Length: 330
Image 1 (tube, rainbow, N blue to C red):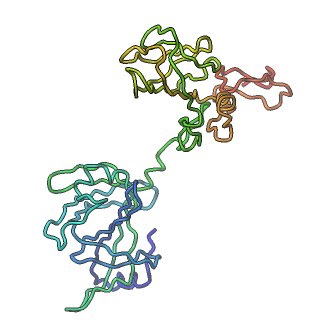
Image 2 (cartoon, one colour; image 1 turned 180 degrees about the horizontal axis):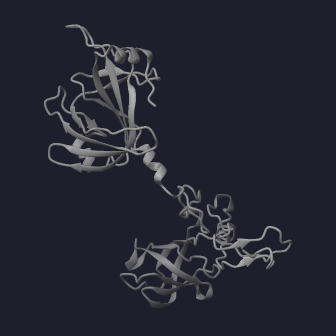
C-alpha cells in the first residue's frame, strides 16, 4: 500500500496530470545524500507524509524499465540506465567529488540505498510555476546491486528491501568462537597496550624459528605479530605460529626474507584464538566476548528432566544424548 496526500488523490481522480520521478541516493559510505529528477527542471518537493523539502537536480538522463509491483511480499528489481547530461547548465552532477560514471566505476554507489518516488502535479498554465505542494508518493526503495558502466551511461539494478527477507541467516551467526577480530572496535582492546619490546636470542635455528629474551608463558604470543626494529629485517612484520617459554622460542608461519641476527630488536604483541578461556585469561576482556560457547549444537538431545546431567565442555560437539535412557528415547 502506498501513502499519498489528499491533494495527490484529488489530482489522480481528475485524470489530468503531469508526473515526475524523484530519485534519492544514499551511498553506503559517507554522510551525503544525493537528489535527482528525470524532469527538465530542478524540483523542490517533499515525500508524503514528510514536510521536508529537498531539491532534486537535473543533469542526469534517467531511463527506467517497467517496474512490476503486486500485492504481497515478492521482491522486485528496478533497472535504470543513467547517462550524464554533458550540456547541463553547470555541468553534470558529481557523487563524492567524482563524475557519476567515475563514481560507479570506483564502487561509491555499491550497496547504496535508492528511493524512487512519483510526483503527480496539475498541468501548469503557460508561464506559471509547477506546483509541487501535493508531495510525492514513495514508489520503490531498495539497494543497488549490480552496476555495468559504459562510456556514456551506467546500467544500475536495485533490489527491493524485501529481498533481505530471503536471507536465511542472522547478521551474526551463533558460534563457539568470538566473532570479533582481536583489537578491532568490537573487541575494544588496543594492540599498543599489549606490545612489548624484545631481542633475538643467541640461537637462530632458521628464518622462521629463533630464540628471544621473552619470558611469557607457553603459547602467549601464538597468532600474534612481530615487527623488527633493527638489523637487516628492520620494519619487516610477520605472523607468529607458536611461542614457547623455554628460551623464548618463536616459530613463524612463513620464513623471513633474511635470517635475523642475535641482538636484533623487535616489537611483539599476542594474538587470539577466539576462545572464551583465552579472552578471560590472556586479555581479561570477557565483557566484550562475542561468542556463544554454551549453546548446545543441534545434534545434542537435552533431557530437561534429569537432575544431574553430565557436564559438557563449551563447544562440545559429541552429539550424544544427555540424560537417562527412558527420557531420551525418541
